[in-house]
Length: 383
Length: 110
Image (tube, rainbow over all chains, first blue to last red; front, side, top):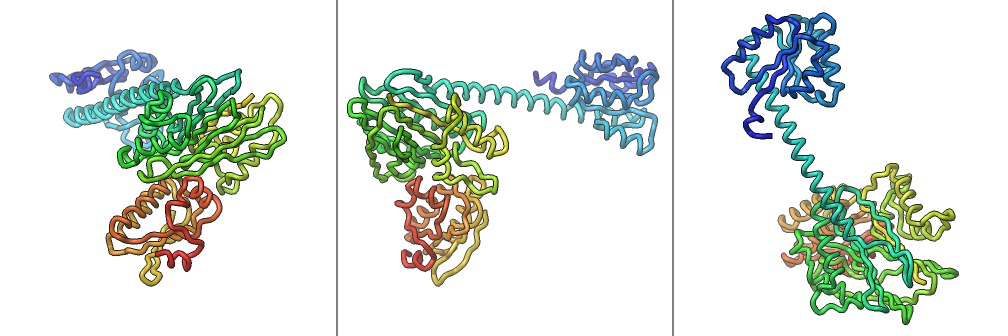
């Protein structure tokens, strides 16, 4: 909307009496910032409003064929005219009529014919407010479009599921706002070693997503000088040095990082403040894989270590953010990790992904499809 | 989140209750900062009434510990249980900050 147009009040006067139209026209004469459209047929008022897009409607109350208050209701029911300021112009002075007009959605009420100065002041006041609302809506629409673009970019960075091979991987990723703070990835480091990681930046929204994308890109491109990406302790140490919260606007993140070697079937893994990953293998108890270390970025002098575990053939590994289990139980208390882990061991109906079952459970416990935190999980199955 | 100040000899105790999440964390940080600015040098956070702590809550606790370290003070935490204790373990905070089971044992750390 141009600034010149934003200053112009486009007025639609709906009144069956030509004499009123002429009077209002005289009031606005010489005012270069007020454009008047006049409709004498109330049955055509809504269509005309749609056509001329007024910034203010002046509406007569007593007309043949169609009652003014009925029209007020119709403007409010029509998406094209719903928010246009409505000034009811009437000869009626009873408080009950005025109250009814406001109840039906009128923004103002003038007993006709008002003084020219007052009429102009009210028309300009309501028009400016409406134009400001349109401009704000447009800005919000643009901002949302940019957020949606950014969300598409973040999602595009996530790897494709791997349906076959020595390691198969599938995932679920549901953000709690347009942009989340979770990211994950997996890839073959060389022909024998497979890297898997999932990180969770504190908070949500644009700030969290920017840090999350920066870290994910560093891990994808393996661009941390002097880092052995085949060793989780080396990766976490390097990330802690590269992303201190003092230089990241107070933001920090947790990460689970693992490296599986198919020659030895050993998995090296480390957690930087991140929940344990869960490994399930036929005829073996559930294993919680968490070589505990501090959250990344909290303390420059923090030391990081990793642990090692053997991965039996057919084992499934679940790596996730805390959003998958940080939902409240029906009594309002949080779902303890051990109860969540025990639930993950329970059988799911044939043909159902455990990840889908978990998402459904989290949504059902939360009482809504909108979850309070990002929900990210991947499942890796080792042949 | 509720925080109540109590005095235990020369130790300032902040008894925290409820949920220490993104909404409550800034308040905790502000209260503790004010106490430190007001001269408190031995600060104990009693988290036995805490139901939940998020990463934002951990950040506020760490900021308080760092602030106290900067002025030569000492800091301790007591009363961790349940899910809150779990979060301290997962985040690595249990190895970073002085923890004690109860107030009496925590005072000995200060």
